[in-house]
Length: 368
Image (cartoon, rainbow, N blue to C red; front, side, top):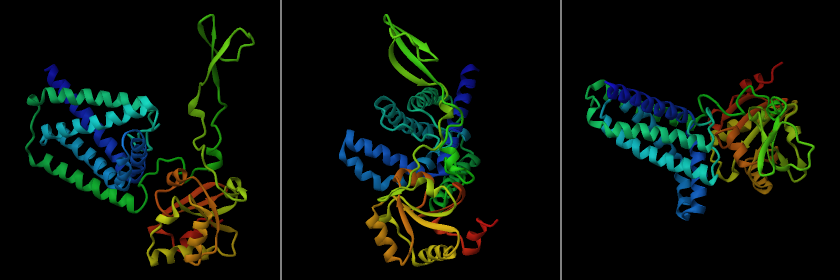
């Protein structure tokens, strides 16, 4: 009876967690792809240059992983071909455990992306989470002969259905934008406010005296104490946005971009922009909509000024252009290029280039 209860609990936890984790990443497969690229960069340096070639395949790999997470979780929950599902989950969790351990031990990738941008875990938290999952999967594997091998059609079609629905949602999220935006630059956020601490930052001081470590809330006046470390007591108060910056050869323009009414045409790499004639015409119409108004349209890209000048010239566009960090641009919007409406630094709207708003819709964002 106890074993049966343990197995049922393990199935619920393992299956439920994989479905939950997979669905969060299905919401934003491009984000998972970016995280995979980070790992491939690290492995290309630390293990083999061959990993660098996998960066071009990061998006299909990401889609495969997130869709499998959901489908395998459903297999375990419904019991359909559960033994096959457990073996596949074992391989997946061993892979994830290696990644999280590598990140934690060598401090290489500081966020594993296990739950996308919805739930942030430290590398060690991610590793311990994977160890718990590994233990639960090994428990299911050890008692696999006592697991109910569901052969009913409902479990089969639920698994197949979850696979197809997850794949469809992933493709839609790639071709548009994430259905739910969990990032710091989501619509409604005031970037200037998010760049400030939410409360006064408080610190504790680790000092050493006579071989003993003592913790103080205030830095001690006693010069006999040797400073060891300063620790932040309320990390939750840190700014949600800490790396937003826009500049050009003339200097920093971050504050300028966060005042007034702005439409940012954002690109994480100009050379990778691939627009159809119709898509380019829609963007041009959007730009022309605000000519002669108090709304400033600018190009912001993680590319050189020469590349931006060439792009604007080739497409007959007359815009101011500025530079930004590629990682920040990818965080702001999962589209290349993407369009962001700002008013006094507050995000009013975000659009994939496939969904460029028509002139009337665009003007409505700045209507009084």
